[in-house]
Length: 434
Image 1: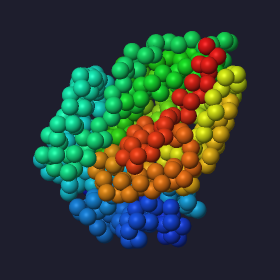
Image 2: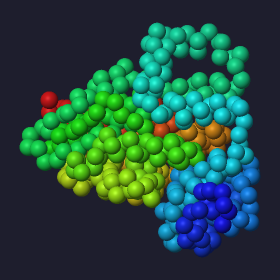
Image 3: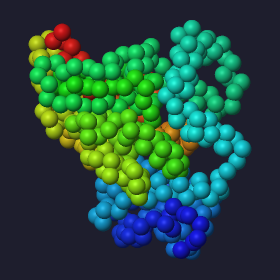
């Protein structure tokens, strides 16, 4: 073994060699489906990882580019008969790519330094950016700049990025949610609510809805006003040590022995949050607590299905035609598929129409739609075509990245459909009861 620390060479070799190369993952992989190239498949990527672990190959730019061409959607894990832990391999492979420095450039270093190492390490900094964007949008500056034609002077990619700028909420989570929300009726549980980072800025209303739903279902809800990123963005982009720092801080802020559950409403975050024990393996202070943490983290749909859903009032319930897009890290990462449908079917007068290819990635995949726009756009157009075929009025999905991606895709394709989190639809049903 190399004397220098290596994420792939130092990884438990049983994880690396688990792939049988059977190829059952190939039809489920969006990038392989698009290119039909072996290197763009899970099997091909694992072969590259194993070659590095075996010291037959050193990390190269081609290797790093391939790891970042992968969506990380984990559909291959659902298909795999051998139970290969591709999620673990994928994160260590990207960390290996970053550690090798083969992608280093001043521009890339500046972008990663600003976003991963500065912006997403502190909620106050995120709020500062959020306030600036909110001010820019509410003053009409964004609308003016889009109308006046200045954007036409920018390169095509910058114009595309500007069009994807999300609308900031009028209030962030700490302005909408009290630190302690009491249960409505008899208290059954005491839970903590994770408000997230992007979720907090763009979909703070979903956080509010989640807390209301929890309270309606007998939970005292603890929601600290100042929280941290879960670290998924860092772990998925090769910043292993930063992800570990954030995991330790989250465990300190939400001691798992003090709550019946630690609730998340973001699929990508939840998939990462449930694996802090792997992230902190060998940590003499945090490893045991991380196992306790993993056992307490629950997606909101999972928690409601487990504890029972208080029926919303049926009176005056409007008819809704809804289809459901399964966020990759909810269905493939957390194996949560029936529970969101259970939440939706609990809403009176709601007709659920199944979405063709509901488990196929929409192209958001964290920041994939920013770094791999062509592939992301192809996947999004495919998703929107299927949404249109259902003739549904509402698309429900349980992840902020998917919500934003599908919203932008429907808008771009002229499809007038509402995009909402399932918990928002449930909260609205409860509010009809006053």
